[in-house]
Length: 501
Ligand code: XMP
Image 1 (cartoon, protein in one colour):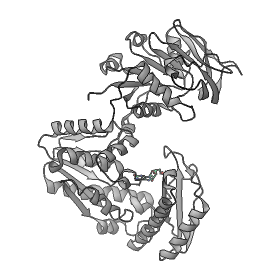
Image 2 (cartoon, protein in one colour):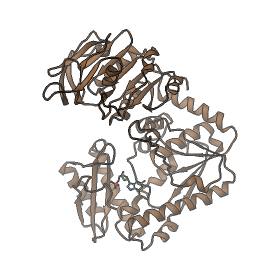
Image 3 (spheres, protein in one colour):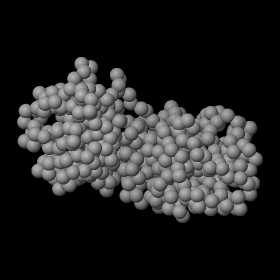
Image 4 (tube, protein in one colour):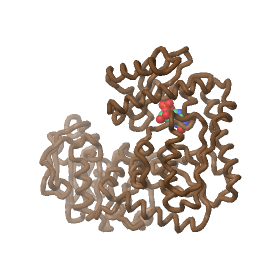
């Protein structure tokens, strides 16, 4: 693709993906690479700038991640953040030591003063809050660098060698707590690296469509559509690129939310693709009858899904390409740890083993979730699909406790619909990460669950206003037959999980 690239060199910090997202928000394409990536490989990417991330180590320790000093001779601008800043200082002849108690060790929000003459802080207020998290201190900065920001405790919060284009900050400009942090990143990109801002979704879409057409030729393409954001956007992209050669198989397992199956189908009606909606509700319910254990439910659903998909694929005959909705966070390698781990991810577990095809196409593998949503909008997918909250593959089967029946599923669907409807009417949907209803196995008791989270590994229960909860509860008990009591789940994760099963 013909866009400028910035490399985020990963030294194991917790905010590294966030740095990459910030760069892309500034309309500059970037990729995260582990610090162990060979220099030639990095160089071949022809970056216009490099950002060294933070990391948990101390640069003066023998075993801490290092960088080949040759990187400083390319003439490519470098921004070091926290550990990255210290590493730059250390490698270029400065001195980094453990901060003495109460001198320069800083954590959290810190009033900071900036030198407005430095390109990094151009056009920004001379002082503001920055987010610090460092226990080490640059006792001596390398030759050629000047001090361009300070705090009360620390004279060298930021350093710059304007001539060589090297900048280092002890704080984290990528986190929201740092005032004007994104502007500093933008300044690095535009003032220092001379970015032109050529990373736009329209451009991405057009390039991706062209590449897909070149690759696929007149081959046949198959895609398993789950109704989730990633597979829907991948399907829309393929539909735009090679519509007449594309078959989307949408396995409707009868465990979706109210109207969801119709919504997915409607969204794809504008493309001339081969859209197969398999009504598999009864076969799923037959297999799930009498099953209590959530893990067994999950297993049965996964297996049945593959079986249905396989049957449909056989009807289509030889397929050349299988499309997967893998996204960038699934493929990033971590810079920390002994061995770089690459997570493998399949939208539908195990599919490639069951279907005969030549190659996999992963058209979203360079995108973050918010970019996937943006691309979906660019392709004309409706907002309700693009902004869909995460929904587990096994669907409502794990939100009806214990035994599953169609009646129970219908009851849950109605209650869940009212919950979502009232949340949207109250304008609360933008404040919540995931929210849903659960039909408990205590007669006529329904639970509501809403959480706030960024990574779904930990989550806080959401403080939905009482009057909104009151309206939801009243409507559900009045309108949904068989529900007489509503409880609201106020446990966080951990110790609880987000789902009930
Ligand atoms: P838990 O309940 O583990 O949920 O705190 C974390 C996130 O994962 C989703 N989830 C699933 N997604 N298949 C999925 O595709 C599953 O079996 C499954 N179980 C939980 C859950 O909705 C939440 O977003």
